[in-house]
Length: 577
Image (cartoon, rainbow, N blue to C red; front, top):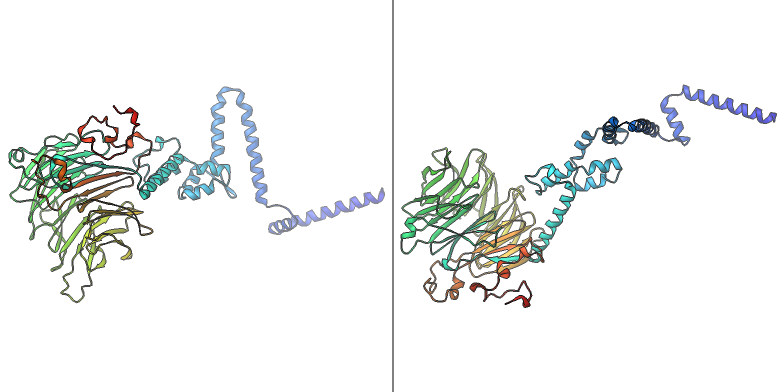
């Protein structure tokens, strides 16, 4: 027993000496000695102490819940406790942590949600997912309070977008033909949003709303001068934008209608010659028309009444006319011969943007910030290396890029500022569709498309739609450069417009007065091949949804124009009478 007491006394003395030596040592030496001896990091001790203080504070606050006045105080304290987000060895306020998390994408937010419960609550904040929805274009014009869970809303919309893309690739959708049999031959087509405007050689103008298939097409009446003339003048050009539709006739008359009311025109003017170009501003407030070398601007004043804004004469006849919304007001880009001009309603004289003698402009396209036009090389200069596309900035009026090197003439250009701002798609007479990168000036992809040349193109971030002179419409996948599918009609494709869900194509005949297509013939369907077609493809509908079925399939078969169509019935045979 004495020996054991002596051992315990000596052991206590050694521990006391060790503690005194540790107290005299520097802090970093004691930390290192503790780590070598198996002790944990001091940060864990601090975190454990902080948890103990929070637990004690929570117990003190729950003890006061017996009295009702302290219920709100308890909820507010719990909210403050949740607002402290642990970031490594410190705690940040919830608002500051939310500021940090707003720079993360969907994948990074999912990874952060697996760290802890506090990080998961922060990563699933509605404000973060609302920002992602707006960034991907799904929640434009919406507020944060419009959806209870923006994360689920973004997931559902991405799934729907993936299904629509699969329908595009597999050509699964609803196809409709917009027809007006009494209009003789189709002359021109224009479309904007859900409106489709068509003009015919009989002088009729028809307007369709693709959101309401059950409603018939609106008949836009012509002015009294054109209505009383026999025969009625054919429609030369049509344009629709915003809530305004316009049409120019071969006799020099121009009519303007409202897409909301239709019926009688709200404005009319007439010139001596035939119109060569017609363009509407994106909001439909200004109409630009060109007759030979004369350019006329008509628009609304402060009271909403239409009047003539400006009259301008150019040195050469106008071939192309485009309008785009600018910082100043509205600029009108015109191509006349070898020159491209910018015309503003405030300025009296047009500004010359590009002019090279002997190099005529073959096509013109304008977006919100840029204008692109194809230039044909004459070949008489030594440095000419092929036809080019010049891209100018509308803000500065200076050249941004000069791309393309093709032996054929460029026939059509498409600029997309929203989905692919650095990409440009163009069509050429050499039968190829080219995808050009404006940053490097190189050709990303060259697609051999059409035998008779490319007449129209359209593109977004993953697909390219092209139309040719032989009547073929091709859909290409941009990444692989492969053709997904094609559709053929008799006449050249003069108009193509596509978005994420729909596709609109118009096959317009070159011959507006074919032999044997007189309106007085007995059998109107015998000359259907001469009239041209307008096709509308909708890839967003489901297979079992009745709203995706064509109106002719939902008819009661009492209509005379539905009996001779080769269609698949949308109802059982025993329901037929």
